[in-house]
Length: 141
Image (cartoon, rainbow, N blue to C red; front, side, top):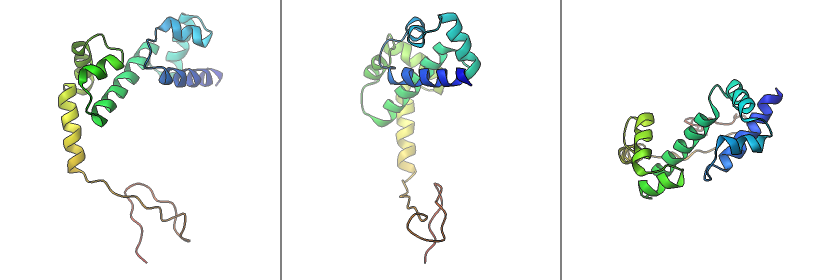
């Protein structure tokens, strides 16, 4: 249980510092454990390597930036620590089975085709109704 708390705290710190260069040595120093012990503990708790976690989180945040902004792919690649746009595109394609630009365009088309619903909560101000979950509609009185 203690290992889970340590790793949870460490992943929060990592997530807050993904914009910086994070080496396994730096993360180990932050944790206070040896590099070897930290990596073993991290893998036991998360079922993935420390380096894999960092790479996955950066790629996920880069994908979100592609979806939510108009920023150039190059700028996003540099922000999330990739050496070049080509490296970023290769890694991105391996994970998402398409180039960053194709993925961005697909996400935009998907957002246009799926209109957004306004969610109303029937449960808080009305008696007899339980809190809604996404996709449910309030009954008409």
